[in-house]
Image (cartoon, rainbow, N blue to C red; front, side):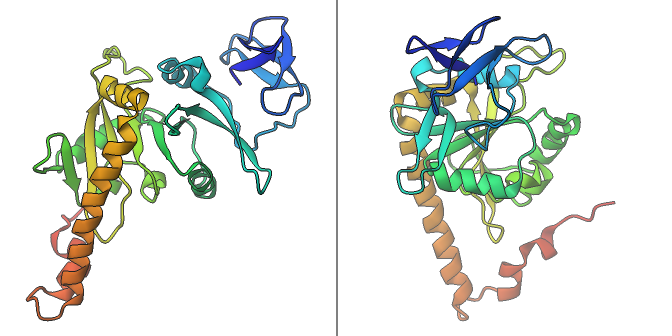
Length: 267
């Protein structure tokens, strides 16, 4: 945790300090070594949030784009009593979860169901090959009529497979952790993979980092995403109706299995 309560004020960890967890109220101790970023840890090994994981400088850098009041917000489920710490929750109700380490599909799904109105921001430089693979796959993106929006037949050739089945938008940050020789720039593009159904093409948005942050801060992000996804879902419903109509002149097999007909051979 980045903040703990001292005299009811949220304070960052510093050597020698003790405080209380903002979620459970138990004693936490400042951990200020030289390997990991300074953080608060519960006096007992057990953490009050089962989804908690160690943070990196990449996490902290992203959190610093938002006010302290929005960071590390404890969100309880009144009915179940389950409680989790959202990395960022804006005043508009949008949750941002920053993910550097590998996450199991079951936990990813559980977080999406718990937070609902959320977006993932994923460190695209966790594995060295991820960025080069993305650049290679990006060459096959197809432009749409909307500026900055692209379509892809095979998103698995660009993005880690663990994120393809997400039910919420996933933002990939390929520059935030620092690429050697390429300093971070607020205008560096992020790439948003919208919720994807394998039967249809994937939609991807190229968004300047500062534009993403601004739309999250002013509340426009959720409105824009919902409007866009409504359009996408209408198109997918139309495609599904065409598929189910045997008299529309479209080959059912070619529609259902397009990849069999257009995928390039891989060696």
